[in-house]
Length: 263
Length: 316
Image (cartoon, rainbow over all chains, first blue to last red; front, side, top):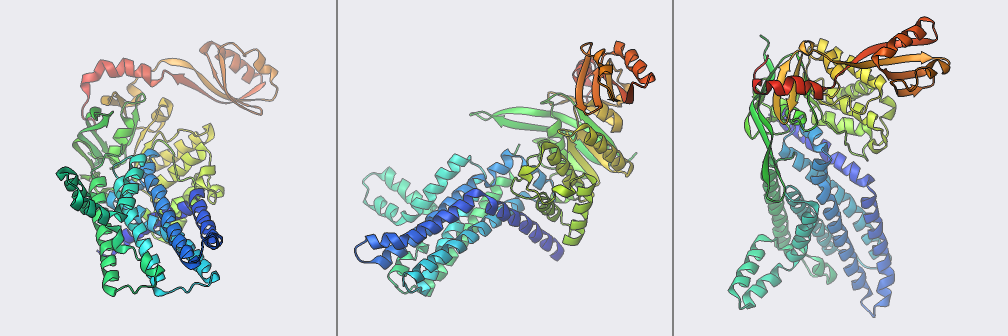
């Protein structure tokens, strides 16, 4: 049994490693990192155009650039992740090996996390450098906010794997953008639901509130900006939120993909 | 009677097409059994269902009706795939991975350790003449090289059951003949091979049994030797040091397929054979090979298949 688990782990690693190598050699990933670094560096210039609060402009822009880069990374990596394999029929050579469809999905997801981790490392290092060069003190809140931006990326990556299992790339992108943006407006959706006079709209908004991940739960960018302390319970809650969503989405993706016709 | 290596038991496979997802049956109630150590050739026109048969056998698809079993186990089970090697029809690979990286990935997925895997990859790349291409990204390889890479990955883990979909596709004549030799070696080593091809002479060379398919149905199974062939022309490979010897043949039912320096690959009509032989006798040309070319399978299908459309069934 242990040997079987080790073999399974090696299979996941073999797939993930090669998703990572391929993505890093892709011009899109390289361009994404390069543009991210250029935008982060340009924040030093742009902040001087603001009247006061230079430090906040740099930090705000830095967090925004990192988040947007990750979002585009997930969008483009994920839309082709499964679909491309099916369309190009490369999936058949992989599935002809003693590897289940669930392991295939998991391997792809792990590969995506490796790619995102690399992008995150490059951008967060650049952001840290920009802050140090601008004389901004990097504190623990910055680290927590950065790590939860990465958590958000990997939740979106799990959504991407889920959508990629049954939709076309344009629909995948549409749904993923919907989750990413509405996820940050979840609290507003609830507020609209409470204030609306139409019963139907109220139900629709409440359903949306319930089925979408409330990404504001793991948004600590404001706390980092204003150096507010972040309670440990909130960090633990954020971690639980991340793990729960990823677990649920990967299980749902596996259930859909294992019964899907790929030819 | 030998144990079956793979069996399709009343297997039916459907796909859904269009906006309304209308059902289309692409394989109808296939009953077929391939004994261990046997080489089975699937022939038939495009859209006959050959690829679907191979994919069902390799456990890549699950039949909508019926079952497919590999050594008594459901072909879709992960455990059934341990002894299977598969080459799919179109050699689409990962353009930004090097050939070595891709081979090591597939070896890793087969559960082979790193040291053993490295040795196996080197051996297969040598066998298929791809050693120098190992460090190259797959997007830079030619179609023939990709096809050979596909074969290398199918053989690298020493499978006992091979599914090869159009293995000769995209290969030059030299590699086509080398691949036939490799397949004959595998056959002699007792491997079970199921492969599809449009080239009847290849099927005839290596197959113990042939399955003729059309429109998702098994039309006929049997030995190629029972098929009465219709002669079409001769396939000739020859060397001519001076081109003028060919001038009298030109334009009289001669088709030049390939020409490389002094070496020619021709197809000539029957009546011209005497002239060719006369040139060879006077040593003006050197004949390397001379083979008859028979009717293609569309004609065979018309003659054997549709006449016997109702005779599909078991054949061991």
